[in-house]
Length: 499
Image 1: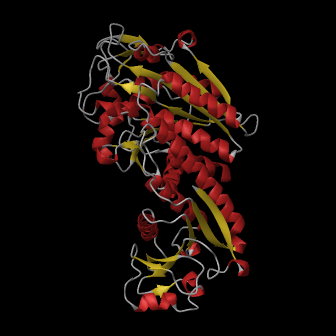
Image 2: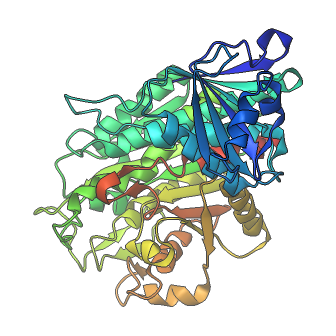
Image 3: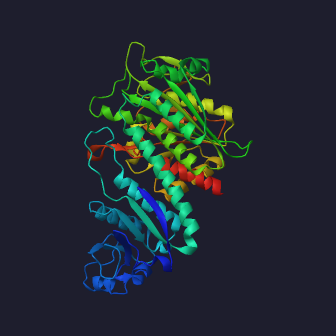
């Protein structure tokens, strides 16, 4: 879909613009916006309001066909709620507008809304919100189907923007498009079946990104991983015939001595649970266990499109977790890259085993910040459901700042997180009689003890952990990857650069 900016000036009067549909706003109690007043020369809007068919409440709509005096074929009056427009009302209005237009025979749309009258939000946010909603409603997960019906006939969407705001709008549109393109990549990868999206396939996708955007790239194979003594990662990989891959992407556009931000994504391309086998029902959804890795690749696509002037490194340990004669067994003890030993009490707690070696590897870059992203625990779903991703950091000034920055980015991108505790008292649950630690801490506070496990490998840098088990994909009739937390990660990096 093509998105563009159209200047609101005398040459582009709303009455003379040729388009399949113009979307204009109505405030609550039937008060027209400035844009609505502009095209009301023939009384079209006044007549619609006098009919009482639209109240102006957020999400109310009235579609006018063949509006007299307009070059546009249709006019969609959209209720925006009270002025100044609240964020929730604006989202509801946009959601309803797209649902109304999507099934119609409409090829192009002009959106003429009062973007600068939102409460506590600006033009850039409004444009991102609209692109995000179009992406959410029109994304297709049926790439492997032979027979596909188009989700909509809409091919072009334009924003009607005051001429003095054109530069801001163009930059906002560029950023929003980069983020939604990154989400699309993350969703496409997440939705692929595990017989296609293998560790090798992820490595190929990383190579393609590196070639397109001139990233640095390293892909380590089993022998190289062995030479680094990543015993925890390799212990998970050894149950599968698919070779493991350790993927490192580098976008080094910041100052030469600037410490990088490192994104570490869990890349379990299929998780059977291993010897601690999962129940068969819904096991197909374990193809989504690489959504952390997919979110890193999606974020790097956006980084490449935006050409951010900072140093960002992506690290993806990728393998399968399958049962076999070579697989981990409950009670096995393995040695991590850090030298710490781990007793494997449950082979289905494998994500933390591949991440701990990746986090130790991150030390070599002397990072400013490390953020790991993982579909780590079902316990996080129990705690937070499918709305908030779990955000875990240590409790000190540096980590409070990182948590605050991530929460601010989450609010701005509508990709919410909730901060969860990490305290030494929880570490006792990871005690082992035979190794430095166990890989599980029992049922109580399962997502917290998983984060505490990872925390033991991050004490040389500032770190945050995002548990996206409840937010990376949806089950049921709308089954599929969501692309989260690509918006959060991209917005965090953009805001970091701007400050």
